[in-house]
Image (cartoon, rainbow, N blue to C red; front, side, top):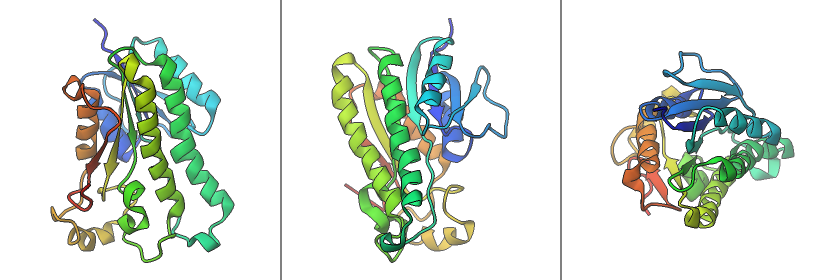
Length: 240
């Protein structure tokens, strides 16, 4: 019997790649990303070039995946940031680019998932950030507006998660988010890891594999009574 399908946007590198690898244990994974993975895909996996800012490309990703079997899980991991700039000096195009990928991209992926994902039993997981809850304070910067575009986009992802969870609850589709803290190999320069680790209660940065494990749990039947939730994976730096 064919395994169900999982779509992972932004799945070609870092956190998205770790998620795709972990989900491949239970699903046939279709990666949608602007760039192809640099390593071999898991057995049965496929790559579809996808810019999540483009509604047509997002629809094409879902249509392509639909031919492989039932769509059981959708994970939106695609995200970008821009250099830290105070709001007063932030270029509109920099703000718009981050919002377009991180938040509008999440909307387009969720909209496509609404009609494509299996009912009941489907699971949607959006990758937010600790910065979506704590703002620039979570990024260890002095100027509160230094990455306002990124923080605002990730806060929007959390709100989108709650809204969609309510909309799809009666259909038996769960919608959750994961909010990573400081993770190795992502947007944090290696030379900052040691100093940053001293400010984390668990004493180290997290790994992409730990984010993937959280996503895998939320997609599983073990999380069958969890929806509208944002799971913090941050080493204790933010406790709600």
